[in-house]
Amino acid sequence: MLIMLAAAMIGLIYGYDLGSIATALLFLTPDFHLTAFQTSVVTTSVVVGQLVGAFVAGRITNRFGRKNTMIAVALGYAAFTGLQGIAPNEWFLAGVRFLLGFIIGVSIVTAPAYIAESAPKSIRGSMIVTFQIATVSGICIAYFVGLALAGTESWRLILSLAAIPALIVFFLVLRLPETARGLMMMGRREEAVEVLRRVDPDMDAEEEADIIERDLSYDEQGSFSELFRGSFRRAGIFVVGLGFLVQITGINAIVYYSPTIVEQVGVKSPRGAILATAIIQLFAVVAVVVSSRVIDRLGRRPILLGGITAMGIASVILVVAFATGPSPVLAIAGILLFTMAFNFGYGAIVWTYASESFPARLRTQGGSAMLTSDLTGNIIVGIVFLNALGVLGGAWTFGIFAALSVLAFAFVYVLAPETKGRQLEDIRAYWYNGGRWPEEGRGASVGAAGPERA
Image (cartoon, rainbow, N blue to C red; front, side):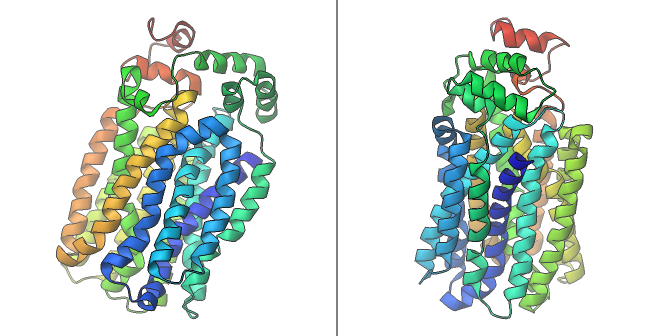
């Protein structure tokens, strides 16, 4: 529970940052007299920082350990979220948000990997999804904080309040153990066995340590390039493609700019726009909680494919909303369905796949590759969306998102493995077998014999 709580708190702060900038922009933009381009720079500077952080996160976590990295993340969150509140101009704010983004980039690779390596396989999926539950809850909290502070128009307070939970995370993480796999990578087997006993008393800790040790005996060095050659090339293509499609289908256009979209379709009051999007985020929390309850029963693939399908339908509703009015009721309904569908599917599953698709030495590098691709798509959407909305109009813009959802469905249908109930160390057998699960009983032989016999 402590492991899940600490990692989830990191997700909460990450979500709060996503949501807080959406509400803060309503007051920040007129205060600093920002142009559309400057607004995009302030919004996406955090994403550029995340891109850099994601790229180096795998090396940082492998070098310093999962726990030490999370301690540094908590301190960085506290420092940089607080500094947002004293920004004298938009360029200082953009710089601080870049540094905050770097910390976020490291955190959202490390926290899901930490949960995956600490969870029993029977509940691993639902435990990883707690990170997304916390993220969506953070977005929701940010909207309600923005609503409460709308009368003061204090964007500084809206942005800097996340420093408080960041300090709480710091003290929680201090009490956490390093993961067993992290300890084994550092040659500390006895401590790893003790951690395994604490996390799952019903497990044969010595046998589990042997499995992890055998997995670590393969010749992966934990380098980024290993994701795209040999047996793991298909896995690398899958996580990079999935990460890019998560963003390019439009979720952060909704998260960053949903109050702006709601204003454009006829809700003129800032408080009304924030309230509408805050209520939408409450439904998003419900969607991801439902996903967490069924992920270890239904599996990863059905949930992800169902979520993508509903996102495509929501994009079509938004096309109609802009083409026929615009219609506030249809627009809000489309945003609601889109947000719930994303959090039921992509939001719940993407970090599960990032954390489950690779062996220990490549796990954080795989998460790093996925996040780097994710953030590249995020930057494109963050910079282009407002201009596209102005130049093409809402109908064409969301029509593009609908078409991209069709592409995403096909990609996932062809490449996504079903990892429900699988031992983390057995998942390499899927990639060694050309993207298919080997016949029953052969997963163990792959672990023992190595890639040549697989």
